Amino acid sequence: MTEMKKQICILLAGTIMAAAFLSGCGNNEKPAVEKDADSIESREESSQQTEMQENSAEDVETVDLDEPYVLVRKIFTSNDTVTEFGYDENGDKTSETVSYPDKPDETLYREYTTQYQEDGSKIVSESQTMLKTTGESMSSETFEYEYNPDGLLIRKTGFDRNGEYQGEIIYEYDENGNLISQSEGKPGSGISSLARSYEYDDTGKLIKETQFDFDGEINQYFTYEYDENGKQTVKHNYNPAGEEMVDPVVCQWKYEYDGEGRVVDEWRESVEGGHKSEQYQYEYDEYGNVCKKTDVFQKTIYEYLPLSVYLEGK
Image (tube, rainbow, N blue to C red; front, side, top):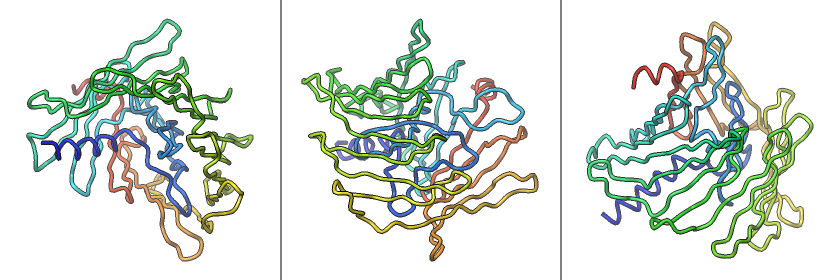
């Protein structure tokens, strides 16, 4: 059971954490058919802000239907593990279930509770991960997420299984809602240290990310270049002395469209050699909105529904 707990904790962490930056072309550019979704985790995690959408309705581009879509299912095709998400009428996430096709007795379950404040901000509390068949706790920590009235994650606090404070991550934004800094609280000290900082150009594209060590010194930094369509094509990686640590790879995005002019396949590849570093495939519903997205490299399928359709089928 101890070994199973270790495996479960690793898998569940993956369902709420953004992927780390890849080398070469990088992977922080959002696909063309998605809106920017913002979230950040620890020093080892991506500056992409996907977790901010984890506890509420997933925003995907809508055409004829004026309501949010929610991520209802995530499938890891390498082992057919399925993660399903539950929501309330506000589009706030209420549950997360992870099931394994060959281990039905090991289905995992986690609940979320959302409390709205008078100013429109909210606090989302996460339960421990439980074995669904017995209710046995399978995790050693939980998190609490605090969002401002604009829906931006401003604080993530960790607790152990006894509810004791373990640390926190604090997020700050500019007037345009762009993340500009991420600080980490030190348990018992009441002190936060800068972990990452971010800089943007006039159009809101990320042009520099700086990572700091636990003493507040620069550990490394990245700069980014984009094409005329605003798609990231080059990622540079520097050490504190400003020396490039990895030879940059110049990349380009390519697309395939269906008969209605919608992107059905897009990928990033190196200009020299044509080596792919990212690839996404899309399917659309009757409203012309994305209902299924496949991340080819991560071997993950995401399925979406309009919130009202999801609620009708509960």
